[in-house]
Amino acid sequence: MPEIAAQREDTRTLVLDAALHLFTDRGYFATSVHDISRTAGVSIGSIYHHFGDKEGLARALYATLTARMLQLIDEIERQTDSSHDRARELVTRLFELTETQPQAMAFMLYARHREFLPDEPPVCSSRPFARMREMLSRGMARGEIRQMDAMVASTCLFGGPIRMITARLDGILPHPLPTYLDEVWACAWRAVAAS
Amino acid sequence: MPEIAAQREDTRTLVLDAALHLFTDRGYFATSVHDISRTAGVSIGSIYHHFGDKEGLARALYATLTARMLQLIDEIERQTDSSHDRARELVTRLFELTETQPQAMAFMLYARHREFLPDEPPVCSSRPFARMREMLSRGMARGEIRQMDAMVASTCLFGGPIRMITARLDGILPHPLPTYLDEVWACAWRAVAAS
DNA sequence: CCAACTAGAACGAACGTTCGTTCTAATTTA
DNA sequence: TAAATTAGAACGAACGTTCGTTCTAGTTGG
Image 1 (spheres, each protein chain N blue to C red):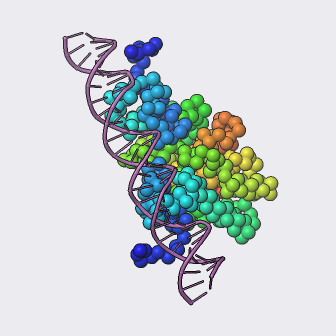
Image 2 (image 1 turned 180 degrees about the vertical axis):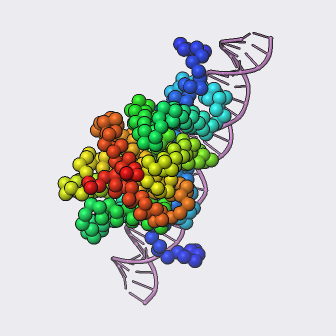
């Protein structure tokens, strides 16, 4: 006997949204399927119908967000030329995303997927991060970036910005991230720039 | 009727060691108290006798490792003068520690304590990290480091090295961390150096 | 009217924790 | 010195709860 809103607002989306919020608020293991069902306003049966099991739900969520991130990187590659501009634009967009969709950011950059998605590779070896490293290798070949191990370069360029993001997600930064963008970027680029 | 080794090898230590390994291998929630009891060779009753509950055990473990980290920082402050030398020595020691005691490192830098120790502040606002930031502020006052927000400075200086550590813990670095030390440190120091 | 979907009560397994007991070694008593 | 007493560390079977999952019945759009 469904109540007010029986209309088909995509059930999958409702469930994924609820899961994202609960997983990032309390963590995967502290969130029960019953919680997700209640928050999403969708029955347990539907959740199992659509996602198979709790892990399948987490996997679907991870896939959705990874795809969104890859899309972002594609867009940036189309709009910019140099490694410098691309990396800077990426950091800018990630800082903005952290303010507008902190849960999505937390789930991608901060959650320990290994603990609940055993077969998933670590985030830093996932496609989006691999794309970033390819980007930097080309930058090195063109002389924009000092010669060094590609892994070291990507780690040193993005390490600072990413730690700023996690600090913000932890709630220990007084101001929104874009406030720090220029200062952080100056440091990050100096770390690897050829000049 | 005790068997071979009934002698008092400190029970607390046995339990803490087992917990550290299991927590970092599988995560806090995937580790049952029964697992810890079995691995440590100590009964469930004893664990509750010593630590109160599972959370108390995690808290004791966290406190032990935090203390060890603070001790390391003290030692470095006594042995070095400049911010440059101190930070470099710290990174060196952390890289070595990651190779010799990867579990301890993973638990300190990588675990999401918030999820199972609700009252603990985030690691980056814990004492050891606060000490590092004070160190850098003094370096800025002395002109070794460019003028900038203290939080940004510490994040940019240590962000790269720390991400290298997590990459190594994830098993995606082919060589031991000290191999990369010079290259990583060169990037890290350039990021914030005054020159 | 049928296939796709939703519903939520019910189930079994596994968890953290408790509790009555045993063991051990030090201390007291005679 | 030998026996009696004591304190608390160690033990592990058992408990109640909660979780992920299943199942059967009902609803709905095309």
